[in-house]
Image (cartoon, rainbow, N blue to C red; front, side, top):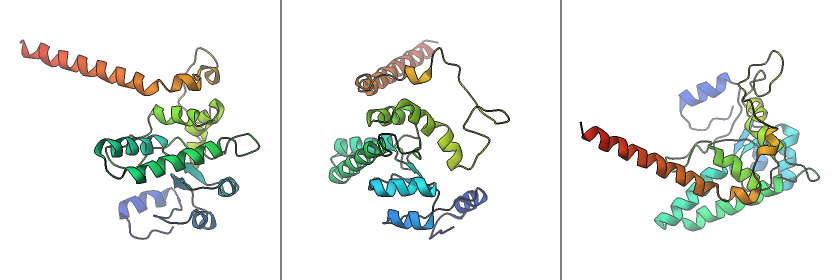
Length: 215
């Protein structure tokens, strides 16, 4: 484990899981050479590097939603817009490339993951999966990113799949879940739908507070 300078409790935790990781590097090739377990963002990965990641069993967590939120906040505050725009453009390019990497089939080691940033970036909400779909990932690959890939990356062989003698939480669907994923055109409405739900929750909360005040 190459640690550099980092929080010792974190290193102890990941050491127990036998993770090999590098804290900050300017070279994705360095990650390939050292055969790390997972890369956060990986926005500058080329098709050749993505294929090497598959070969070396290296996973990528692009954190699309986190980078999009970073861009939205940068525009709102009018701060570091150029940097945030670059990051967003690069991660979109990388994920779009990954979606057809293997002769039209997607990169196999993509993760549904969270951004380890600040309060401005969410932690692995469903919007991440919707964004992956918008970038061209097919539904089957998205379900894989959200289930078995995560288990493999975290070295949890008994999780991530519904098989005999494995531990798994599962959901019963009314139909084939791969057919329930909305078309890309509908995904564009997702942020608006989320806002509607949040506004409704705020209304209920305000009504509840007003009700309490009357007693």
